[in-house]
Image (cartoon, rainbow, N blue to C red):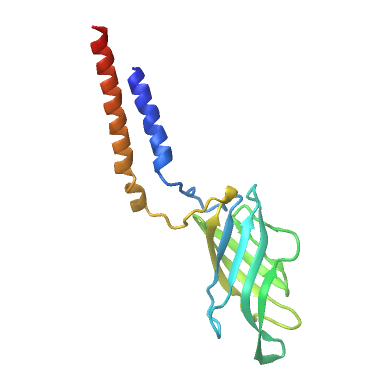
Length: 194
């Protein structure tokens, strides 16, 4: 009976050590995670910019939403271009609603909204406006994925099931080795007691 308990414990330890971490299967925002992505709307001169933000530790707020290198046009002079190099949402954090959406930001200034629609992914729209630059009347679409979680552990957003299956033979081999050692020790002990 003791050998079975030891075998079960060893199998559990091996599974924890050898199986890669995965994200929870939920559309909810991952608390304490950093998201990064790009603007997907086509623009005159790609690239059209990037976005990044983090989700608060309790999962209730989007914090430090920042747009980088977003092209625009000078108001009243559509032929002249301008750019928002690094533009961070200037006020309080954006609340995440019960339906896992956030926004709308500040009208006619920093309009941002988004939703967490699938595991580790977010998407939404963005419009930046100042007296010297405007991204346009139409909102820019953006997408973002988790780049890291609490503690700075890097997580791959698109881990497929096939990568997990590569570890199954290793776990099986470790379990088989443990069974062989346990059985050998049990046999030697039994032989010595005769």
